[in-house]
Length: 114
Length: 113
Image 1 (cartoon, each protein chain N blue to C red):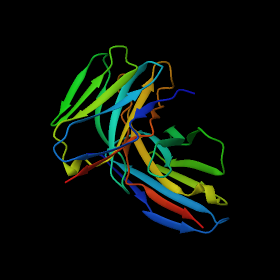
Image 2 (cartoon, chains in turn purple, orange):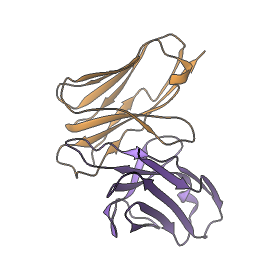
Image 3 (cartoon, one colour):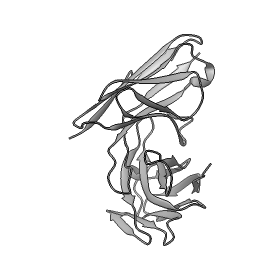
Image 4 (tube, helix red, strand yellow):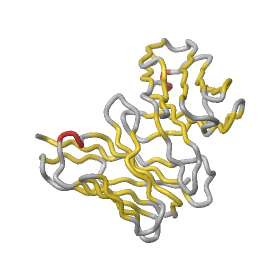
C-alpha cells in the first residue's frame, strides 16, 4: 500500500530564516506530487505540483520554491521566511486515472514564523 | 478563476441528528471528491463522483452529484461525535489542467454528544 510522509511535523522559525520541508511517498512509482498551504483550518491553496523528476509548476508567485530531486521526493524551500508564510503545509500525491484526480495527503507540517 | 462554494461554513448539531452540506459551482466538473480533515491532520479522501446524478453511500454518509455536474451534496444520517471535522469538496473542472483540483473552503462540523 502507498504511504506518504512529511517532516518535520511542526516547525517554529524566525522571520528571514531559511526553510526546507520534505515529503516522500512509498509504494507507488512516478506519482504526481503537490504542495498545498492551508490557512486557519480552511481551504487549500495549491502552491506547486510536479509530474516528474525536475519538473515543477508554480501556481502562485511567492518567496517559496519546490524541487523534486528523486521520483518520490518533493521538497518545499525558502531562502528567507516571511510572517505570512505561517500555515499548515500539506503534501499530496496522485496517479491520474480516467476522469478523476484523487489526491492523497500527508500528515502535514505546521509552520509558525515569528 | 473558478470558485467552489461550500455551505454552511459552520454546523453544530446534536448526536443523532441528520445534516446535509453543499458544494456548488457555476462551472461543470469532470469529477468531484469529498474529504474529511481532523485538526492537525491531512485530509482523508471519502469518495469520488464522476457521473451526473450519481449517488454513493459510505455507511451513514450519502454523496450525490448533481445532474449537470455543477454541484454536490453530502448527507449524514444519525450523526456521531466521530463525524466531527472539516468536510472539503474538491473538483476537477472540465477543460482544466489534468493535475489541478480546486478546493472549497470547507464545512466545519461539530457533533455534540
